[in-house]
Length: 102
Image 1: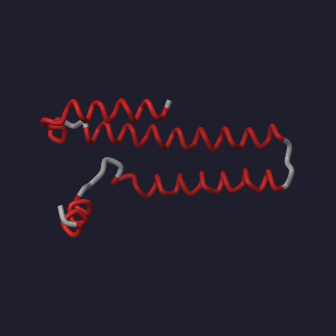
Image 2: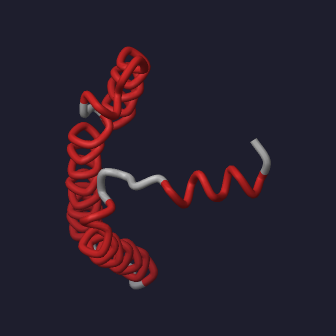
């Protein structure tokens, strides 16, 4: 597939999270701020347990975003109309994604 056709194809794809893109972007922006805050805590020689608490909070927030994306992927991409003959491939892709998360 040529680069132009490939770009047009990718532009026409609507992923499962498309309707929730703005809230997801806001959540990721807040997480980014949390991580910057952790870096400032390290630079500021803050107490280790306080830093670890903030790292855990950021990880938890990322996990929640990942689970939401996984749920949307499952709803959208595992829809019978979407899956078609690629059902086994889609199931394998989903299982691998869950495996990476845990």
